[in-house]
Image (cartoon, rainbow, N blue to C red; front, side):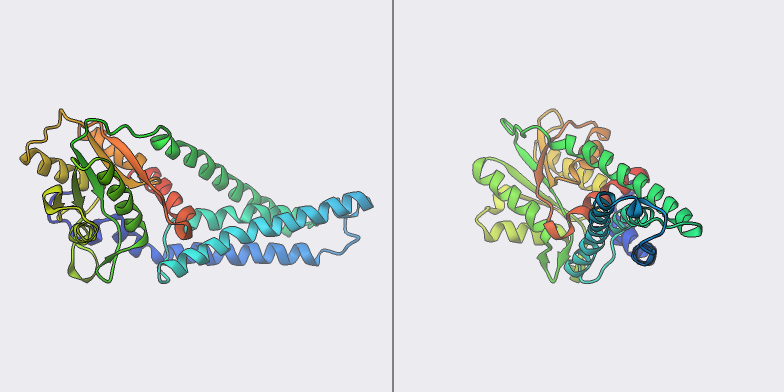
Length: 307
C-alpha cells in the first residue's frame, strides 16, 4: 500500500476524517427517517387495517412487537452517540451501517401499525435496506471472529509486532491502550519476547510507536526488549517495516512472529502478513466497549472497499 513517507492523511484514519461529512449525513438521515417511521406508526388510528386491529390478543402481540421495534431502532442510534462522545465528536464511517440497520425495525414498526399508501412503500424500502445491512453485519462479524477463534500458541516465538492506533495528548487512546495491555501481558508471560512498537506520526507531533514504547517502558519492559518502528502509515507498512527491522536484528522470516492488535482488526492484519509471505500468529486485544460496534463495522467496510 504505499511507500515510506506516506503522510497520516493516507491512512485509514485520514480517509475517515475526509469522509466525516458523509458519515454525519448518513447517520442524521437515517435518524430522521427512522423517527418519521416511528412517529407514523404511533399516529396510525387504532381502527386502521393491520395487525393491531385483528383481535385483542393480536393487538397485544402487535403492541409488544412495536415496543421491541422501537428499542431495536433506538439502540444502534444511541450506541453511535456513545461512540461520538468517546471519540470527542469525531464521526467514524463505522457508524453508517448501524444507522442504516436501525431503519429495518423502524420500517417494521410502521408496517405492524398498519400504515398504508406511500408510508407503506417507505416502510418496506426501509425494512429491505436495513435488513440487508443487518445481514451484512452479522455475516461479516462471524467471518472476522474466525481470525482469533483458537487460542494463540506463542511457543518458540521470538518477536511480537504490536500494531499502533490513535494517540491523544501524547498518551495512547483507549484502543491502543488495550493493545498495549495485551502485549504487556504477553511479554510478562514470555520475557524473552522482543516487542516491536509500530506506528507513524500521531497527534501532537509524536509517533504512535514512541508513545507505545514509553507506555511499555513505564511498566517495566526494558529498552533491550523494545524495537521502535515509527514510519508506517497503514497496516501493510506496519508489518512490512517491522519485519524489515526484525531481519536487521537477526530474526528471519523463517521464524514465527506474532501480531498483537484489536480483535476486530486481526483478520485484516493477518491477511496483510500472508501477502508479505509471513504466516503470523494473531494475538487479539479487546475492543473498547464504547466504540465496539463501530470499530467492527469499520473493519467490514474497509475490507469490502478493498483496503
